[in-house]
Length: 200
Ligand code: GRF
Image (cartoon, rainbow, N blue to C red; front, side, top):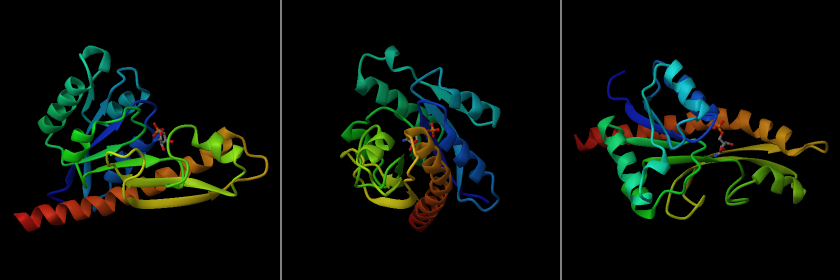
């Protein structure tokens, strides 16, 4: 298929969601291609997996930059060099500046391990258990300047079971993350591509 939306995946760690996106994008009719995987951690396991899958990778160690503006300028340059039009954050553990996010408005997604707007921030599985919630899950949302608060694209629920611990609950949520992130990218990439083609 021509004109697939060139997508950059930003990671900091193991990259299991990244792998799910790469796998989905192998599908003949998938409207996005994973054209770049970028990590702020040179040691991120996901980089090796991306390389092994034949995807271009870039490691930008934040310690090599004077500050956030310089780091983000390098990210922007890498995305531009790869002709990226859509970004998926997938376990990317840095908060991007409002200016960066604004430039990518409507074209930057994140996956968060909770049923947003509940449980924004970190340690969501521990908190779901501590609050004795009956349900937990994950959310794909557009990224805005407000942390974990952008418009929701997709959500999946899982039950919290009586004998759950954070790891077991996280594993059950992760299965759903790997299912809904590709679905959300499919939907958003179709919209981005349609808008691009309408503009000409
Ligand atoms: C996932 O739980 C995701 O929801 C959160 O960070 C974790 C990343 O895992 N944002 P992985 O690197 O995709 O395996």
